[in-house]
Image 1 (cartoon, rainbow, N blue to C red):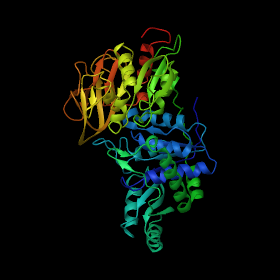
Image 2 (image 1 turned 60 degrees about the horizontal axis):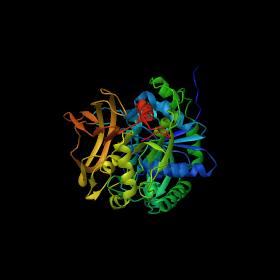
Image 3 (image 1 turned 90 degrees about the vertical axis):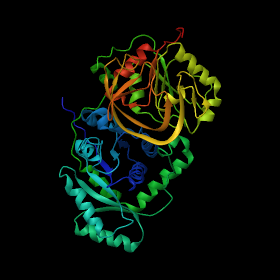
Image 4 (image 1 turned 180 degrees about the vertical axis):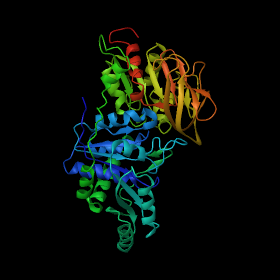
Length: 464
């Protein structure tokens, strides 16, 4: 049966990074939410931080749409899943409109996503250092790919009434609608750090104020009625919504049986990187998902039989994490007992012997430190051996994003063999029930990771 999804939608894109996509997208989400609409927030690419601001603006989970991590065939279903029950969907793009995975053409670009979703694009243009040239810039972006529909422009960082007049005149000549003009203002600024914006969980009161400022800036400077009409012009979609239980069944995962094991998932300010679909898959696989905060909680959740520690900024909180010796000991004991532990990036560092000289959990015989070098990019990898997440030979697409170095970078049982880009190498650790790696993997593309972890989890009442 063909499913028809009628959801008004916009993709917020830009000619380049730094143009103001996050301000405009988050402001639009908050402004339309303030009008009483249920807004579904989405982010192109692997970024974890912007979706936190999107969730704050809308009250719904911020969800990622990444063609490299999940495959183009899942973009529509994952979008439909996230947008279920919403009145409007707003998708924030990544980098410049046509920028995608290096050397892969349009793959993982905002343009590819906009075409897949058949969504009109709102181009956010930094007008701070131009006047009539803006027309040539926008004309180039609008004509580069005829399948990408540029529905209008929002001008950002406009300096004065006269500057606005010049920009509007140029775009009027080019036949492009101006849907908003935002002046230069520090009110909606959000602080950045070595990996981008500071996550919401680390600055929630200030983040609430920042989102409110973005919403006010957008309300004051944008034609919300015209943007709503543009969103409503998007045609129906026919993608069936992604469903975690169906994804597990389709991957051959057995249905859950027996008592529900408790899977403890690290959160709080130090571990903010996670995809919403991971918890949904764990729940569908039969687990009770219980969050905990390694900065505050001295004990793991009661009856915890498995552990998931995602990405974040443990280097910022190394001393505080180290000071929570009671919890570090519980994590080490659970891992040593053979319970399944899945750790990505920040979780990998937390399981190490030390981080910047501060003692960590000591599960892995490795030492981590901050460096000046940024490691960033998509990776193609294969499971070197059987693990709690995947059988040997499983191929995955992942993303690496950090400024730390781990010595050694791989154990005697590595997690992954990275086959692209660059020369082949191994990385990460598989020992007992532990799978720890720098690589971020989206489980919607590997749903059996959730079922394997839950199947290995210690059931309540069983000896660990």
